[in-house]
Image (tube, rainbow, N blue to C red):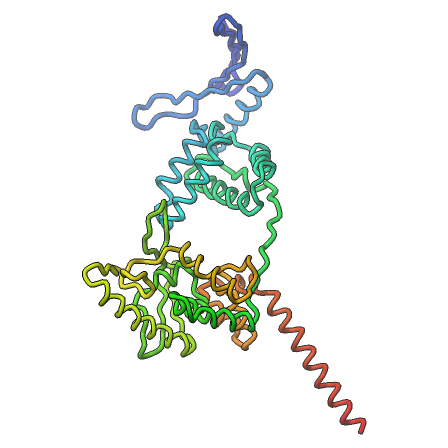
Amino acid sequence: MPQSKRTTSGMGSIRKVTKVVKGKEYTYYEARYTEGFDPRTGKQIQRSISDKSKKVVAQKLKAALAAIDAGTYKAPCKMTVAQWLDIWVAEYLNSVKPLTKHNYNKQVQKHLKPALGQAKLDALDTHTIQRFYNSLIASGLSPKTVKNVHGILHCALQQAIACDYITRNPADACKLPKVTKPEIKPLEPIEIARLLKEAEQDDYCNLFIVAMFTGMRQGELLGLAWECVDFKSGIITVKQQLQCKDGNYFLETPKSGKNRTILPAPIVMDALRNQLERQQKEQEQAGEMWDNQFGLVFTDALGKYLVRRTVVKHFKKISQRAGISDDARFHDLRHSFAVSSLYAGDDIKTVQANLGHATAQFTLDVYGHVTQKMRQDSANRMQKFYEQLSSENAQ
């Protein structure tokens, strides 16, 4: 019969337990204590602690009893990490955009649950998470992807704290790989001129002009509706973007979640007028086959939304004809607009508003090298001005 030892407080006990499983004998120590009383039934709530080491069990029991006396005790969480992640995705991500939720769940199923899912939620420790991150790097994942995985796990664990399942976030102390920001490659003025020249022969010419002189994201361009174009005031309202999930396209709010207005150069409104005329002719030719249910500005010959890869394909062909680097991306048009705006003298808040960045600091982080060069150019101009003054005074 197992020996039992009452603790000094009379609230817990430790006993040695021996069990035989499939012919093999296992021995461990178990402590039982009373957590409190069930308010519904009035019965005692019993908890247990077990370990191969009697010393470890005694320490955990002492800590539990001290927490009960201090009123800080929290019942052990029986959930696994996998169970909590499933709950978190299903119940706590409903306020984010559908595509964001989809991408989060994709990382949860692909990386987090296979590696950490079996661990008890309240037993997950920093070192286990750190080894997981290190294994992702070793497998070839980029530092940016690892950082994204960390962000998802950290967010899920923060919610577990808020729900009182755990007391601290074990991901806080992890060391993440350094993420190298991709180099911004805006087009040079001569390249922009050649690109626009070659675009004149392309069906998507108007789209490329609007992209180049507004800095709108590709999804925002493809989701732009005629109701958001005010020819009278010359203003474009950006309130939605075309997104794709599992091959299905749908309209979503902008990346920032907020609408913004752009007062573009006249060339943009001219391009939009040309696009309207072009689309009206295509609608006449398509007849009953015309299908522009969202009233989009940029569509194919039948009025349907444009597919991203098709736009990129057209951009690549134009870039090649213009003699632009093969690694040029459609998104570089957005960078080119931002850099051109800064060189033209637009303040950082104006550029931020036009691009739809959340903060001016983010805009500075992305284009800081440009503003630094501008400051250096300013210093050089002042130096030349000083030298000119000095020369005139010497005469």
